[in-house]
Length: 484
Ligand code: FAD
Image (cartoon, rainbow, N blue to C red; front, side, top):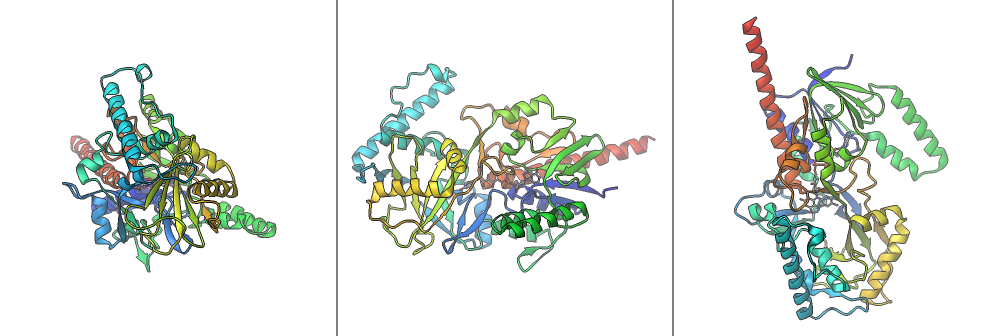
């Protein structure tokens, strides 16, 4: 019969790792961490591209310089993570039209102010409980510049429109992570405190990663014969349930008053007294994990109510620079008649001078569209946009990197996006445990959902609630024994 752990943590992103650390610090050593992908970090993920480390997921420590210290900023400082300050406010003065002209700063500032005022007005009306459809929107964006600004204001969180707890509590400064070890270095640092590591690698068999996934991914790029061999190897490994690096994709949680039985994709079975589930809101909305008995309605309804934001950073490598650099030029905007069409750009010269890399950010519908097409098609579109802005003679990109957070079945999106006017009840239900299953992850953070620090604090919070539950359970047990 399967061995039984005190706690199984599903997912080794920042919330799973911070939860594990708190449990270990409180004497719960017999835990198991099951991770569906081949690495820790989840939505914190570094990739080497064009000679530097780029962050496909979280890139900034958001919320620095305020009245309270941001715990992730503290972790970054302690571990000497290299970062550089980002000043988004300059973006509005670098808005290009399709003929490559920059809008005069007066025009841009006016459009920006108009958009902020109208967003605030809309928010007030919503707060006053008016039906959003019924609100007259005299300023609804129509022209390319209005659409571009609308995209910046709403698809990126801008403190001008609504008070965002992250900025209110921790400050409005944001720092871009620019470190070869990646943002994920913070997670390795944390893991070192409670998992056995050597030479920067986690060797503790309480952490189970999905090594097979990376072999399969590599195999897909090889010849048919190699692919066949690897697939057969994979099948053999599936038959051997004791192999340490098997697929750890959790597919079923069977829970009762006595504990939780966890079943993985390959039919492995683990048992635990409790489970901490850190899978994203997108995964909870998908059918990846089934619950037996099913989750109660209050839970599933709350899960459905939370929107999933898709945020895609596309990296492009060039043989030389053709965009303006220097103060106030890091971010620039492309104004097109289609909202969100390659709108928001950043050069990476501040982070990595001489890297000749540009990043363009797409969201939601545009992200899905681009995920579904080939990278060559995306490259062509992006080059078309850059030629509009900088002329026909610019060099072609020599490389492109397109993350696919939406099609990743272990993510299904980038982060949770609670409706601006939503009662806290939704997040409260999403966070609430169901029997012995405890929920964590950025989407369970009341104040900081969507952020790295949200995930980090949620992990701590959930494991503290679990420790409290374990203490009560122990008390109940000893009380009943005394009674007997
Ligand atoms: P995750 O990191 O998703 O961890 C959950 C883990 O569970 C994953 O590793 C997943 O593989 C695993 N898992 C899922 N299903 C299963 C299963 N069935 N079995 C086993 N394992 C499973 N935040 C910021 O603060 N600043 C930013 O600049 C920023 N930018 C972002 C940009 C992008 C493109 C994205 C995607 C996110 C960004 N975020 C940013 C948000 C931030 O990355 C997340 O809030 C945070 O990393 C979430 O951590 P988590 O532990 O909640 O979830």
